[in-house]
Length: 437
Image (cartoon, rainbow, N blue to C red; front, top):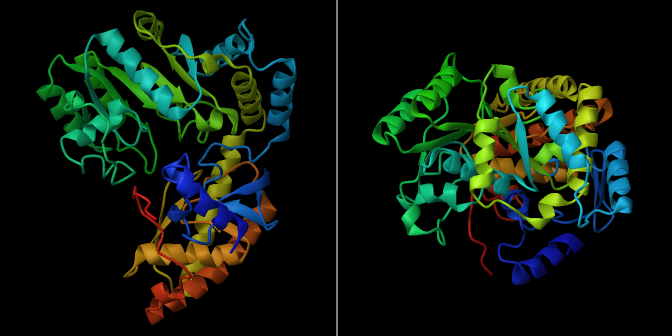
């Protein structure tokens, strides 16, 4: 047995769920075969514990490494921060410098608070919004993390969150008293948000959503969301954890003229080093002082140093424009390869985060077989690519050649009805599932 899968068997006995992040569970990709652990990662290359080197054309550190793994400019800034002392009784000056840069990039924002990951940063944002308004109810669209405020939506029905990226989330451990405080609406459905606002008159603290994720907003949708927030006095919170920095150097909301009260960044803001930022207007952000929001490791030096180096490089190299070109090239390559193979696929997603769907009798099994076929060819791959600066011409060319061959093999398996039989292990999970055994 490979070293990685064998180590993962040990991990499942020691770590509830096997990993710290659902999105990194091998069961989500290729159960029993996914390498599971890495020895080193550089650019778009990843080495497993057995010395095999793969090109990562999958989730790129779950979207955190927008410049690629171990970017030299960011790594140099981090080394300097560590050598200067990553923690101290005093505060690091980089946090002020970063706050000024974030407000420069987002002229509507006036104040900044920090955290170290997206989930906790979203909790900070919701706490501030509730403190600023004196209200409890949050209307939201999309996926926003693991915290009580969000999972409370599933207290009324275990299926409430299913349409919001990740199905099967169990709210065990979330206080029953939070039922009715988090209510979802669907993207491009301002009428659903309006209904929430009307039925919770005077109680709406915040409207939480990604300005964009998988598809473009309908004309007038974001304006209507902004209008409803204004009319109800709710704080509009833009979740930029996943899409921030990919479309523009800053938040995706800048591309759409959407001015939120708060915006939240994590993941790509620091290219793989723990860092998150909550930015907002002075009137709203000062409410943080009316609550208790404080944590020791929100003051470390590495996070702000990494974020400063990352943002400066994103701006200097115009990375967002490069990601768009690369993503469009990948989409075109998928289409050409699928057409040649006679494979029925639907292509979607914005350019920096393209995806395809397999239209066949057993789509999840077929997606798993695609991952298996690509792994055999030296690629970490699924039906989604988080495009990075490190995905240069050579990486994309090699990947699309491998895709062409894999699509041909997959099309033959689909035609024969032999997709499950050609898998060397179970079908990948499609949502949250408890691990047993």
